[in-house]
Image 1 (cartoon, rainbow, N blue to C red):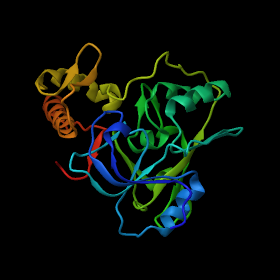
Image 2: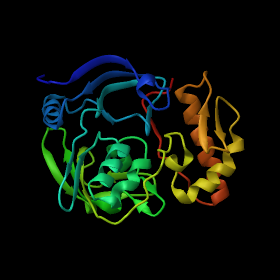
Image 3: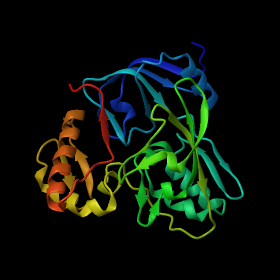
Length: 272
């Protein structure tokens, strides 16, 4: 396999996670750029399980670990401005993009300065802040398939719900980047970035009050601080504790709301 990136084996993912918990990944590959990723995928077996991960704020590998390859997007962080918008790679941090947009007369995207994690994760979880929704500002998505071929996909080729977004016809493709529609209108730039553990980042806005009301149901290693609206993990917490807490919150909030309440955080791999 001809690759220029970093290839690691048996990697503990807790230290790579915004949550500080997680099992072991069989392999982790961090490509140097988009072309390197395309070459890597072209050489990879089609039956090899693949997971894309940025900052680890929206996906956690279970304690039992994951067989296959985790592709880290940390070096896929290019941001290119045009007259009518911006192209940004999947690994670019939302906060960095938001501040850059504010400086380049694209204030309509400046709200991203308050969003934790990377653009790829924000797209996958259909992030929104107040009246601002990320997918409403997407012109097209740059993807790569398992053969290493790049594609430009229209927004209509993706299915969206309140906490998740996925390709409807090309589910095997990964996001390389996205073309976002700019705009000079003024948007509020948050003074501080919201934490990855904030319920406002983990749940759709209309579900947050129900989640906060369900907070007292958590009594183990993971608790919900009603004052800060943040999930707190004690030093003994593991991935299984976090997953159990999320399941409890979703169940209690769903009962209160009278409808299904889902979380943007997902768990993959084998249970420990």
